[in-house]
Structures are given as C-alpha cells and as structure tokens.
Image (cartoon, rainbow, N blue to C red; front, side):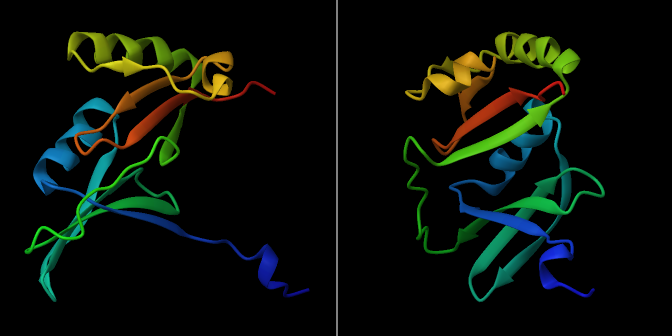
Length: 134
C-alpha cells in the first residue's frame, strides 16, 4: 500500500532573526545543535540552518538586508527540543554557567514534566524538555 500518510516527512522551521551569526552560535554553543549550512543574498535574504546531523528537521534563521521581517515572538511561539533525561542536568548547568536566564512559562505543563524554558537572542522561547520514559 503506497499511502502518502506513511511516507516520511521532513520539517523546516524558519524564523527571522536580527543577527545570523549570533543565532547560530546560541543554538550551537548552548543547545548542542550543529550548523548544517546556509546561503547568502538570495533575493535579498541570507540564512543559516542548524539541527541534528542526519535528522529530518532543521531550523532556518533568515535575515533580509532591509531588516524586515523582524522577529516577532509571542509567548506561544515555542521551539521544544527534547534531550535524554540524563543529559538535562548538564544542559541546566551549562545555562547557569553561561548566565542564560531561565523563565517560567505560563503553561504549567512544562514545569510538571521537568522542562527548562529559556529565551533565545531574538526573544523566542526555547523549551528544553527531558524525553519521556516509556
């Protein structure tokens, strides 16, 4: 049965940012993602991608030479990254060491599951969530 719903999907999350290099450094150095590539001046846009090597997803940061569109995060524009439970203490310690502010999200679910919420350089919320144990 060749059902379209059973085929593997790929995912790209694209977000405008103010400073491409700063965003890439944040996601690489703090969140352990890998720089996957980028492009320069495509119709006025430049971009950089980060993600996990070999994964079917990545995050694309874009910047137009005009500065528009600008980042416009809301409290529900969450990027949730799942980490192995045993890696979470190391991640939280890294946040403390680098003076990355941890914030409390208005949705109590994230605290209940032991997630840590931080703000990236453009004001987007990033949730570091321990993987569920089955």
